[in-house]
Image (cartoon, rainbow, N blue to C red; front, side, top):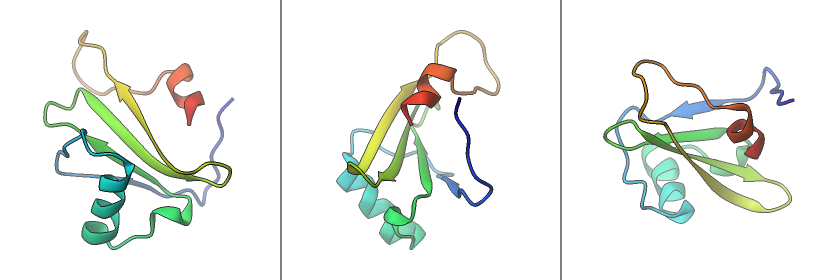
Length: 90
């Protein structure tokens, strides 16, 4: 079971991002564009231009800064949510 506290902040990039960037590249986007510190425990969510993939940048106290990728299935349109397996990776 995945649970979040009410204090968790989630930042969603409005503009598409080049998902070929490593977590160092995404770290630069967060610090330069959003003027936020990626090590605060917030989630930073980036999507590609077609909105079929997303990458989440987060800070794990055990492993440091990390980024996870998720692909949306081509079936169906409209809102999408992370499956239990994908959300558990976080």
